[in-house]
Image (cartoon, rainbow, N blue to C red; front, side, top):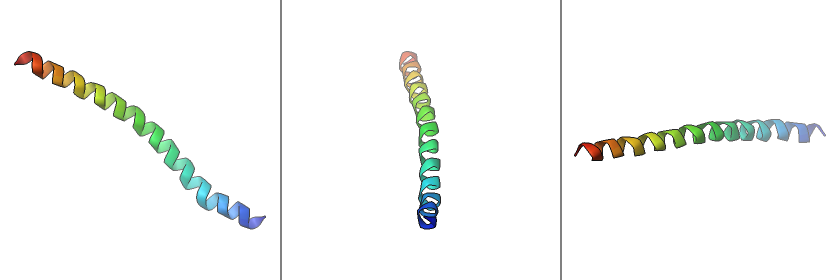
Length: 47
């Protein structure tokens, strides 16, 4: 049973941190994509 707990601690924590970071980064990437799209439209309207 201790081995199971050890495996959960060694694998579960990094997986949880990775998922958390991916979820946070995804939202920021969506906002960045929207900003780039707006910027390209603004540049196109200037020309």
